[in-house]
Length: 309
Image (cartoon, rainbow, N blue to C red; front, side):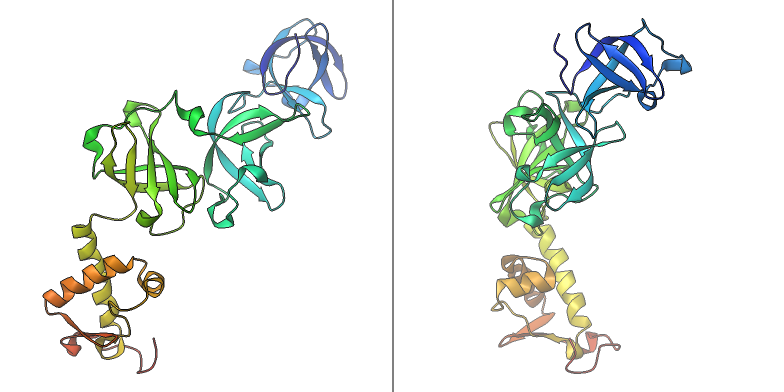
């Protein structure tokens, strides 16, 4: 047989070569099983003539080698692996259970740096060989998930569910939602209009199901339903006003969307809904581009001096 990196094979221990380890063989090709890579059950020592199950990989000198350690992933499999390190020119290095790391090349990562994973994020990848036969990770594509995912139940609508970002673009982010007892997971998408922050590939996210499609996939949002969100947003604006000098702020429904997003972390439409609620409740009023508390006495006594923001 041909020995291929990324596979688990049963080989025979051919001979010991001190101080390095043992050579194991398929009868045609020999590979080194270093002493440090021997993990024998119960501490039993191996000897020439024994058959051992080993995982094949390339060492730091690009030599095909063997280990008795069990990897998190084998050739052709798809798994979710943790980002252990990041190299600005090479890509991400992933933990895969052997005390060494697996490269997810820069070419596999989003062009937009804000969308790229950070250390601790977890990405779905498929283990492959590069042109030289060395192990490399490739991002899992939609077709890689097909045999694993299930159709989301219709009662998921308006439910908050956690998942992992599998792909993120300007237009939106794709998420594999947790399946629990149902299975591997269900696919969803968060349109850019429903994101209240930048989402990274491999990030853990909690999102609300806004719609369950006929194909079993779901539309998602990072924000509450309008009626719930409006109350939360109005409370946030009111707290901000109470900390302002004289209970006034230089923001109104005429303020640019980017400024609102920067200051309050919500969209302009959500800001206008929250202001509308406060005005209907006669808590605030607008004068030009300013919004003020109807009763300035509500403002905090510890508000900063006039002129400070």
